[in-house]
Length: 116
Length: 116
Image (cartoon, rainbow over all chains, first blue to last red; front, side, top):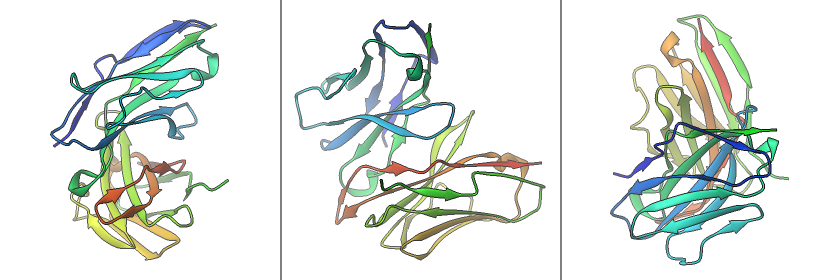
């Protein structure tokens, strides 16, 4: 079974600064996706970024980038130039590409507050 | 702009009443997932379907919960009878899968259920 661990329950960052959210996971699968989802107060789950395990290059989406360390099973999210609209809960999630484990396993989430 | 829709957005009911939540997956997606989100348990997978057939409902309390896909454009999650501990946000997500391969999931806005 897969597990996803987000050990920090909450973080705070000053607007325009950079913040890194941590995530570790455990799996015996070799082919999988890792995701970061954002859940603002509207509660909509929004996909922020996706990383395929077979890709060595870290994924980047505008101000959002990941540091994917496959051997260490670590998948952190870096938010640059933080904006007030980034205030939300952020969930790290794992999904195997094939077979019975092809369902999203979520971490407990981290609440990020961006201070003006 | 294709998206997953869910109704109702919010539901308040009394213990013992039947609750039905509906989901319309994105057109062309053949896999539908139901998740439940609570403060204590986080996001949990309840059940999922592929091509309208249930693949896994092991996360769902069988005695009171039931999930169906009457057709490719509608998925339902029913609770009968409802209990206060069922209070949560219920998310539907859809994606595409073939054989042992699964693609990423897109979430609906969720139904917030409150059972008094």
